[in-house]
Length: 129
Ligand SMILES: Cc1cc2nc3c(=O)[nH]c(=O)nc-3n(C[C@H](O)[C@H](O)[C@H](O)COP(=O)(O)O)c2cc1C
Image 1 (tube, helix red, strand yellow):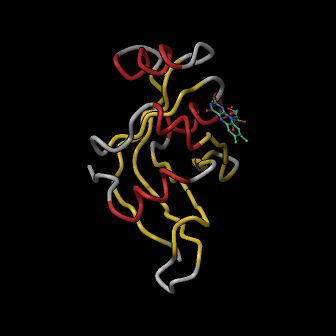
Image 2: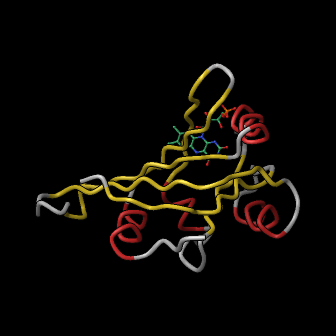
């Protein structure tokens, strides 16, 4: 488990949205969430990211077969290593959709439309710019 800290914490604090990629039988599958949703469910206390799941049905099926997941976040409000505005981070780990338990309850308590939570255990974080 890897904590989200430093530059990546700054980027996730400011990213408008988050791309979420999984692997399916017919190839890559990509969905999204809002950065504010990830912040609302608290990503920085541990190496776990919790995302409210309203739909994510194909994502759920993909994760049952291969639990690898990759997120991409970015903002122009954080400088890259070249000093220019713009930094992005890819975050990879293992994910599952949980419809019961503490993370699902947390998601449902904050988002009335959520059927559960996409729970990601972070394994690797890297900057892109
Ligand atoms: C910016 C953005 C934010 C989204 N946020 C969520 C979200 O928080 N939860 C969710 O279930 N779907 C969200 N969606 C919809 C998903 O990306 C996706 O289309 C839907 O969940 C279907 O997933 P599936 O293809 O895995 O079945 C969002 C889409 C966009 C473009």
